[in-house]
Picture 1 (cartoon, rainbow, N blue to C red):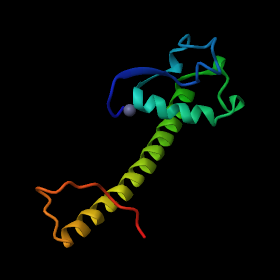
Picture 2: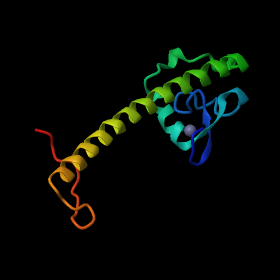
Picture 3: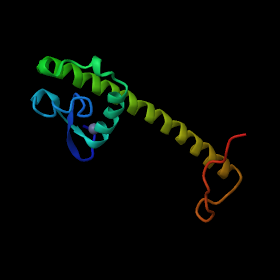
Length: 117
Ligand SMILES: [Zn+2]
């Protein structure tokens, strides 16, 4: 859980296992809304047949599936962080170029990175 409102996630998604819901305590996982949203991507790319049998959910399968979701969420967050780093570099270059041209950052508006040529 990284931040945001706390929720309880269905480990085996409700859309695929509507009868399971939270009937099994092993299907409940505390999460934040943000992680829960990313986990939805994992659910969409996981075939129903890949999930454990809902009747056989236990502490061991719970831990395996929580771990799987966490690995997926961490990878998606790392991808997003990489994209932000690229944007940071663009902004830095744009600011350096602007300063090199003698613009006054205090009084002149800054319009952001220009497309690289
Ligand atoms: Zn989170």
